[in-house]
Image (tube, rainbow, N blue to C red; front, side, top):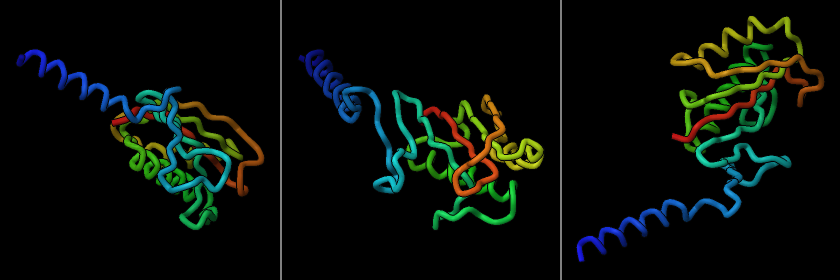
Length: 147
């Protein structure tokens, strides 16, 4: 009888763990309410989080003043906030992609970027780009593991 109760408890626990996972395995996360634009801030697939690109906008949605370093700092703060609200952290970021309007600003952006990843550096790609949203100098997207 004890064994049957143990198996029943384990079955209920496992089914409860999988209860919130959508049938297709993809969960569109909206930690700030309904999206203002046609994309989700984060998408969960299994234990991975795929974050939408972040530029250096403040809470009002305006690009911060101060150039590449101010924008990089704000973009990374935005990423940190999305990660924390969706079940991860900066220490769990596995991959970043950086888009830059001017690759000459790479060293200045790197100073700020490195200060956000003190334990270990995620894999990273970078591209020169034109026409970033709101005239931004850079945009960063990342993939992280859930906590």
